[in-house]
Structure formats: structure tokens, C-alpha cells
Image (cartoon, rainbow over all chains, first blue to last red; front, side):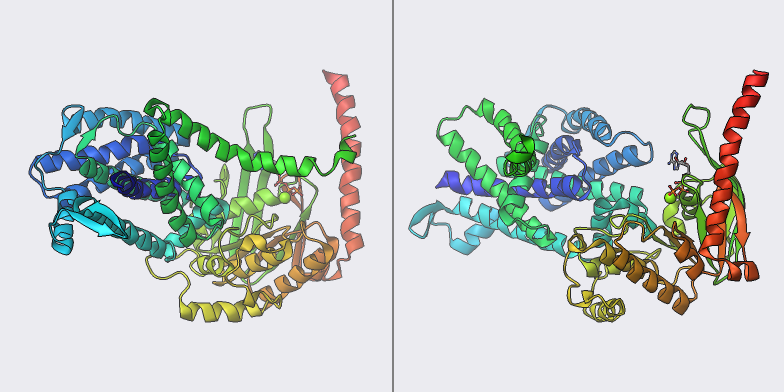
Length: 313
Length: 270
Ligand SMILES: Nc1ncnc2c1ncn2[C@@H]1O[C@H](COP(=O)(O)OP(=O)(O)OP(=O)(O)O)[C@@H](O)[C@H]1O
Ligand SMILES: [Mg+2]
């Protein structure tokens, strides 16, 4: 049960990352690898500030801003300096590795006695459920700490999704979506596509760094390696999400991405439980994303070639 | 009013792919004038429109529009003054977004875009009214994605979007060329109605001599990056499709004559 709740909680936190990847990959059609650096940057900034005695909320906000800065930098390299988009991301990601080490001062920062957002969630849960130790939900015994953490994260993600959904329906948000959908059109309607790419990548990496800051507080440490493979993981969530909701409407896709992230986390937990070697996890994730990307084309080709054997003969 | 003064544009200068697409084009278009551009393939018609829209910056020359020197303005800044419909029906709209959202984007052409609702309840009613004028039944499908519409419906919507906030200049580049005859006719009628109603200053490229003589109040014919003929006033009023075709035939004959002559001269002197 603890395992299930744990995966749910982590899946929800990683949903923020998946939402960030959704913005760069689906809205701007750009696989932005800056994410690998900015998720760690978020964790590093938040953990370091908290160890330095700053409040959890302030530290988390600062982490988000740091991520936005990193994303904006990638955007500027790609637009103002006309560097290939993928390369811009790689440059910033590589630079961030050193930056993260500088921020943390070492490769791992533990959060032991600091009051983090996780501690706050626990306090909130204790006030809500009492401190009896275990809760009984539908016949399951659940630790109060786990339950309150899950509840806190759930509220947080719900808020983030609603905020994003509303944003995408404003003048600014629709223009941003149109920038990815048809840049030629939106330019003819007076929007600086370059500016929106910078802005969009800042938003994307802000969400990703926020996710990193929450992971650090949930796990109790920030580690310089934690970003490795995170883009592919985010892509997997986005792709599962699209398969789950099966439409192109923004609201549904946001919900789908969150569900995709949680489902993916659960699948990983089950696979590990069945004895999957953790070292193989990234390989399997990569293969999964590969399959999800080529499948639609393969199926289409299969469908168009098979029913017309007369033509081939 | 649009004033173009001696603009030149060479693509890929100094390479084997060098193309002198515009070689000194000057043109003054009065307020409310509707100009039709015809010309041979590759004569620079689209390039002229792109130069005005700001898809690139011209090598030399100046472009003035509505008392602004826009020669160095980036494309998105010029969009404040210019409405545009492309040849490809896919180019003018965002396919995954709804009709209402696309129109809402056009309703803020060249304006700041903040955190107000893109499609409010009040806005929705106005969108309906305007879309109804297209007579395509699209007013009941405002929340459908544009991607589900036919090319003709998209071009009609793009036209509506381009003219939503009366632009100082409307650019139409063979905007019916990719449509079936019936849709093309519908879009042309719409084009005529909108331009006449709002008295829009317009540059329209077409390959149809019929459209050229039926629409607009002035015709220019381009060839090799230059304006070859400029029909205005009574000359324009007398123009028939056959006359225009004769002029094309002239160009062709001269070209055919040119090629052997050039060869002969080369053999002679080189
Ligand atoms: N971006 C570009 N890069 C290189 N060459 C270009 C570019 N745009 C146009 N050209 C070249 O400039 C010349 C003029 O092209 P343009 O598209 O303006 O012709 P057009 O008159 O619109 O022809 P059509 O009737 O076929 O549409 C052509 O030789 C074309 O190949
Ligand atoms: Mg053309």
C-alpha cells in the first residue's frame, strides 16, 4: 500500500515535469533537453536555500524562477543567436551541470531537519486526520504521513492544471498555442514568434524546475544526477496521456498528461516489484517512447498497404 | 497609401543559385485602390508581396505604408497594418484550434495580448454574427477545430480574419488557386464583397485572366522581377482577358527570340 501511495505521489510530482515537457514538445514542437538540467537546478536551488535557513515557499519559488531563467536562455540561443534548437538545449543543459554543482557545493544535499513543503503537508495532514499513526481508507491501512503527502501534492497539481488551463484560454495563451500550431499565421497576425518561444520555454522549464524542487523535498535530498533521462520520462507521460484521452483539446490533454505521468509511475513500480533490474529502467523507457513514436506511422502504413494487394501484384 | 520605391531583392547572392527576384520595382497605390498582379511563373509576384509583408528585408529601396517607413520593420510589426491570405489554405489558420479561437487571434492582430479571455461570452456572439456573413453555416460550428474544414471554408475564414480589423493593406497571393472551381468562385465573391464594403487597399496576385478583368481597378503585369505593364484608368477599363493573353504571348515570343540570339552572340564572341 505504501508503495502504491508512494508511486502515486511521485507520479503526481513528476506530472509537473510532464506538463513542462508537454509545453515544449507538443506546443512548440521542440524536444527541449534543457529539462535535464533545469529539474536538477530546481532541486539544487530549493535544497540549498532551505539548508541556508530560508523558508520552504520562498525556496520553491526561487527554484521555479531559476528554471524559467534557464529556459529563457535556451530560447534566446535558439532565436536570437539562430542556433539549432536541439543544440541550444544541449548547451544550456551542459552548462547547468556545472552551475548545479556550484549551487550545491557538492554532488548531494540532504534535507534532514529543514522544514520543507513535505513537512508542511505532514503537519496539515496531522491536523486533519489526527496523529493516530494509521488511517483506514476503504479497508486499507494507510500511514497518515503518506496520505497527507499525497493529498497535498494532489491539491497542488490540481491547482497547477486549472491555472494552466485558464492561461491557455487567455489572449496570451491562445497566441502561444497558435505559435506552435502555425507560426506563419501567427506572425502574420502580429506576434513575435521568437519572443513567444523564449517565453514558452521559460514557462516549460519553470514547471520542470518546480517539479525538481518538489522531488527534492519529497525524497529529502537533491542530487546532481537526478535529471538524467528525465526528458524521455516526460515524453513517455505525454504520449501515454494523449493515448488515454485521445483528443487534441487542451484541457483534456493537460489532464491526460497528469494521468499519463501517474500511470507510468505505477507501471514502473509494478515492474520493479516483479524483479525488473532498476538499471534497465531507462533503456525500457527509451524503447517505450521509441515504440510510441513509430507505432502510429507503422500502423498507418500497414493499413494502407494491406487492403490493396491487387495493386502491389 | 502604399509607396514602393525601387526595391531589389536577390536570393542567394554570389552563389550558383542566385535569383534576382525583384529588380527595381516601384509602385504607388492610392488609398482604397484594388490592384491585380499578373505575370509569368517566377516573375516575382509572390516575392513582391512577401517584401511588402516583411517576410524578408529588401536589399535596396524603400517601402512606405500609411505614413510609416516600414522598410526595416520585422514582419510581426508590419502585421499591425497588413492583413494577409496565403495561397495554401493550410497556411492561414491554426488547425488544432477552434474556429472561434482562430478568429479571436485575428481580432487582436497587431495589438497587445494579455490575460483577458480570448473568447468571452460577449465576443462569442459577435463572432457568430460575423461568421454568419460568410453564408457557409460555420456559425454553428464555432467550437470545431479548423483542421476539420474544407480548403474553401478555411480560405473564407482566413479572408474574414485578415479583414477583421480593417487593415491598411490587404495582400492576397493566389488565394483561390488551390481550391476547386466552385469554392474558388465563392471565395472570389466574398473577396469582392469585403473589399468593396470596407474599401480596402488591396494587392491581389492571380493567374486567372477572368479574375484580373472582373476584379480591381488596376492591373500590373510582371516579368523577370520588373513591372512590364501597368494598366490604369480607361486602359484598364477596356482590358479583356484576350488582351492580357496577347501580352503574355508577346513575352513568350520575345523570350524564344532572345534565347537563340543570345546563343548566337555567345558563339560569336566567346
Ligand atoms: N526564399 C527564396 N529563396 C530563393 N529563391 C526564391 C525564394 N523565393 C522566391 N525565389 C525565387 O524568386 C523567383 C520569383 O519567385 P516568386 O515566387 O516571386 O514568383 P511568382 O511570380 O510568385 O511565381 P508563381 O506564379 O509561380 O507563383 C523564382 O525564381 C523563385 O525561385
Ligand atoms: Mg507565387
